[in-house]
Image (cartoon, rainbow, N blue to C red; front, side, top):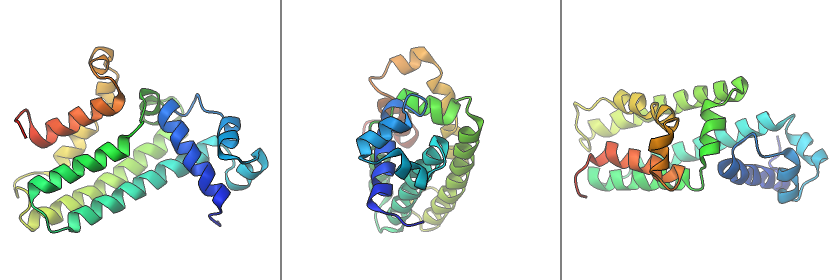
Length: 190
């Protein structure tokens, strides 16, 4: 499919609105108005909002994976690499809302939830491969199991259901970053 400017505008607008308001609250009409596209143009590219959400999610995962792979190929020490990984997480979760997390990871929309779970699992398989490669270079401990990160990170969706815990943070991004820093650094000063 041709990636016209209108296509890119729809993707960009949908990402912004989905991250801010979640999937359910955002309408095709809102996306079209903000992107400066007609509904006819929207339907030329996407049969429905779910397919748009899948495209946006897949694009963001690929963008993050490419940046992560480039980082892991770099010639920097473990401490600097962890700082850069956290920076990637900051950028990837910028403007992410609790509604986004609920709609994309916990929602009752099985088609979207299954797609997100499949893409997340695929991404983690690739991430674990990258972690192992960097371990072999001696950047991180060889006895560290990358699978541990996957298992622990998959629990963040469950933790977001804990309203008292989520209320301790100003935003979903703050919560995710706290979790990420804890995994990376424990409770030690940096």
